[in-house]
Image (spheres, rainbow, N blue to C red):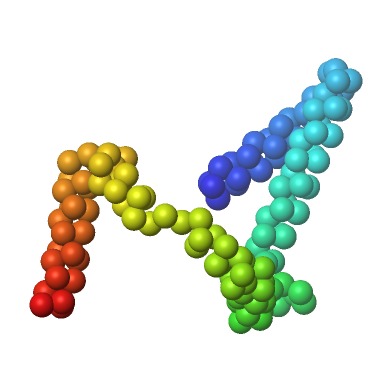
Length: 140
């Protein structure tokens, strides 16, 4: 993606300078020049914004850059709290687990698994058989 983005920026620069030099030939080239200029400014602004999130652009210690590495622990803690408070609520998890029928899901899968028919089905069957056999040994 870096190569494509850099290539597009170079193409817009070529279009800009070409249309600027031939603008006297046809007035409509002024619109092409303005489009290419806006694309270059937008591309450079996007590059700076994305680079500033992860590191210091051009190695310069500009304030408010390298935001993610500097705040990664705080971002991780905030994300963990968000997940815990919005998705891992015990009532919500319990409600979803009540709707899960694991036994019939395994049965449907073993009857006709999606994907690789032979290997997946035999592997799952063997795994389930071994699990049941180990349960029977524990009871004896």
